[in-house]
Length: 424
Image 1 (cartoon, rainbow, N blue to C red):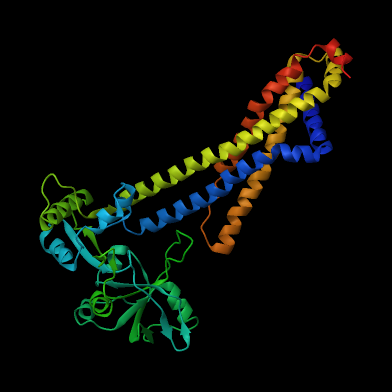
Image 2 (image 1 turned 120 degrees about the horizontal axis):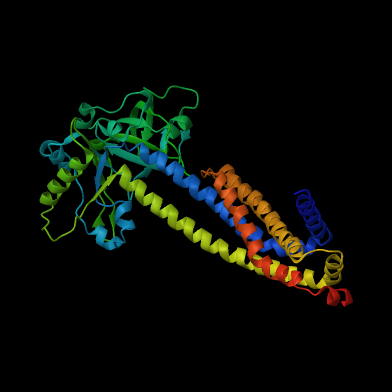
């Protein structure tokens, strides 16, 4: 065992000497490996960061909440064309009332107007301070309960304000911070689209998922929104985007709620048995499943693309190691004449190849992590650097060294010692 440990130690020292004595050649040799591992670690950090934060945001939907809308991520994930989706009938507040009155398993029901395709973007003003353009949402009084968003201060809109179309507003955390950096916003008057609104509440922070700020929005009564803003048209179709959120009543399950809502909506839209739904129904589980599919597809594509760079790097390693074997033919002959066995020569050159590619793997990990952290710092995009991505980078790079270094190592091990000593 002592001899084997000493042999490995000597081989590693020789590999380090080879790297140090041929810095430029070694750098060019491992360049492809560095690029491949950088791609794996850098993109994995962004994809995982995006997925983790989006899952956290989805969890705020609530485990039992069901959402009904004209279009959603599920429509596009299933491959439906955008024009076919636009032709669907709009979801309305009347649908929300019907669900509340006619679905026995429905508990809390709330409708939201705006915030989807063609969202109304407006600046909020307080004195000389103005926010950037951000989404304005019209909501019913139960909206905050359905979306499990906590209030940081004040209160949410109530039924009286919705019925009377009151000019009251609940600020997301971002506009509240911009307009009132050191004061309590509740009770203050701000301007929105030329009208004066009274701030009645401020919502708590939500987790970021896409690099943007999910708190850049404001909520007004749905009736006030309907009075102020006209629904936009897209490709000739009226885009009055209403989303209905429903929670099951006590004692009812989410699956039963989904079934009951689907039956009612199909009746209201007069769909035949052979026609598919012309509306979308989402739960936190279904959205999570779609997100996982998307991130897995992106990750798989990333692995395939990175493998090309690793293969190029591997070919470079094989070429350089073959040249190294030729240059060191006499050295191999001397080592064999002194008693070195084939497997020891094989190990020597194989360890050198793995050492080279592993150095490239470590550099790739450092560069990939730096890219991920830089994107997070400058763009605010969420990142995640799981330890398994580092292991994956090292594993890939070492595998490239073993696979592409094997042929030159076998060639070196098979050299005839007499012929090798004669080599000039």
